[in-house]
Amino acid sequence: MRRHSLVLVTVDCLRADHVGFQGYTSSVTPFLDSLAKNSIVFSDAVVAGAPTYFSFPAIMASRYPLGLGREVLGIAPDEPTIATALQRSGYVTAAFLAGNPYLSPRFGYDQGFDKFHDFLDSSLSGVSTIPSPLGNSRFSRWNRDLEAITARSRLTAAAYHEFYFRYCQWRSASEDLSLDQLRRYPAADVLIDRACSWLKGLHDQPFFLWIHLMDPHHPYYPPQEALSSIGMSNMSARRARFLNSFWNRGDVGPGRLRRHKAEILSLYDAGVYWVDKQLSRLVDVLHQMQRWDETVFVVTADHGEEFLEHGERYHSPTNLPEQLIHVPLLVHSSEVDGMMISNGLFSLIHLAPTLLGALGIDVPNTFQGTDFWEQVRAGTLSNEPAVAECVDGCNNPLEVNDRIRPRILAVRDLDYKLVIRFSEQKDCLYDLKNDPAECSPVPSEVLTAERIRLLKVAGKHLKTTITGRNLDLVSRSRLRDLRHAIDLKRAGTLSS
Amino acid sequence: MANLRTVQLPEELCVKAESWLKGRFDSMEGLLGFLLEEIIKDEGAKLDQREEEIVQQRLRDLGYI
Image (cartoon, rainbow over all chains, first blue to last red; front, side, top):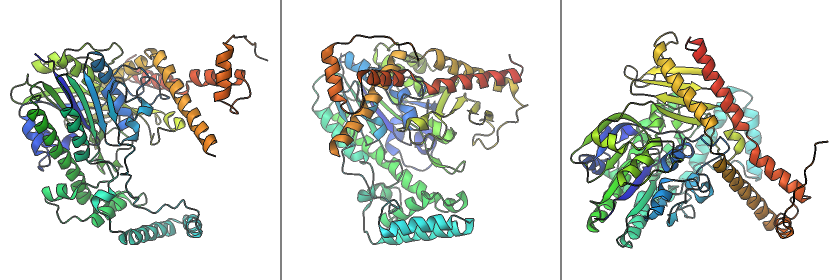
């Protein structure tokens, strides 16, 4: 009998509450909803960090994002991952990733893959929705001066930003660009086409295929066909461009932004729909190749997305609300008959070891997570609290100094969630059963036993980070970064 | 002045490194010093320690320890 193969689909920005099999009422994931009827659905899957650069070390290497220190970004050179473990076990491996720079060979994500295509060389760089104010033309200089002058009072600053936004809209209106031209990342159909071609070239070997899709990522420019399919055929590219530009404004408060939230959500949902439709094609190909029954097929996300629930947009690491850390997780395996809901809490730190467990492959000893495959199959998953972490406000992780800031740490179990913001030395406890939207932290004198219990988990996590650091991997990473910095400097010297 | 230590490296390696990093460092000592400083520096570790202390203090405030 052939060994099981593995397909891991990660969808950037996909929230747990925007897929039908986890309760979303709009029908944007019909294929995955039908697949869920014969799969394990994890009702409470939680990422180990957010956004992408703080989430994937756990997904691929079962390691907390700050486990090698804040200085290390991505996967360390020679760090064992699910891909390297499978490759060593004789699997043929491939990754097709939709142009996310944080998932590139620069950060070690190609390790363990025979074929690695990150689409970063793609010509799909998109079109800026705002003309650059950084130019050096006479107009740009005049504009910068005007901005500085108007910044002296709130009223004139607001007037300037409103006028500038409208000017940009007027400028962009003259360009008649399609949604396909506006998109910044290759759409799911492009990735799935490549993945299917690769699959069709395989012989009899077991394989590991990782696909990372960016369709729900902002700016939200889904294919027109996806919009039509969810009943938004009246949405034009020009309207989508306006909406994305408006949604991106930093000078507008949540009140004005909310006026366009429904339309923005439609664009986002259309991206989710497109992912669903393309995954259906991928599964069809696996059926045609008669490899479906032997394949463990997994769909999850690296983090969710915020739509002003707490005043924020996108997925900046300024907090760790449920909208960011609660993600869908579906595992289809021929061993599962019917839909099985795994109601226990499941951190994605355990995903790689659990999937290796499902395939009968040894788990590398550097993995911080545990193989819970037997417990998942038996429906006896424990409710061990999950930890998620990020560096507070780190929006440019390529800049080391941006990473040397205090953490935000969330400790979550099924009923409660403790969020510690170390920059303010403040912890907030949420009663998720009674306040699932995390609107009001529990007063500090209430539920003390729960707070202490979760604080102890936080303390243990931090202690492990300090004492359990793999110094070999840390030094390898630093040497890689140094090499990269010197290469950049040399390239600059040579080109000048 | 700090105490100094003499290390020995293959001549061929030094020549290659000097050529590769031409103009970036004045000497092999400068290059090695820079590399070692970069590898061992650990600003983030201080934050980890501080954050663990904050959690311990909070547990003390709540009467747990």
